[in-house]
Image (cartoon, rainbow, N blue to C red):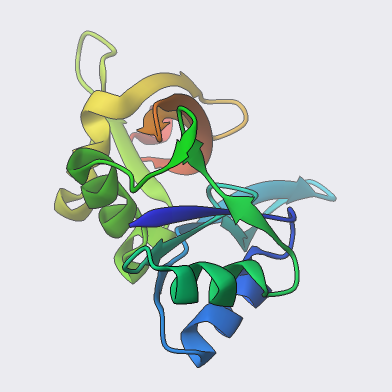
Length: 164
């Protein structure tokens, strides 16, 4: 799996175009909470802004196909070379791109106020959890992509009513 660097805000258009020409594409998205006029609303947003993940063989023909798509800046380099992401990174991208993850991350707290993820489909995020902001209803998760650490912020739903 390779990582395309694309213009921020154009990830969905690039992903759709890649699918049209026959590539298998992963574009992790999630529901994000935002406050508007004292009401919490949700919208779906891209998790890794500026990136689209494509499963392809790295050939000259494929390179020129993807690089020729509008809003594609280039392929992400690992060191000085274009290289696929490693198997662990790829597995996380595939999990994050599942439609079930788009929903809010369900978090609860034990008696010692330690956070844990409740839903089985989201438990793979547990060891990536860095911090929680209960007031903003967000959690920061750490991921390594192509040798670089990325902190992504996802919206959460806190199970215990006392912690809202």
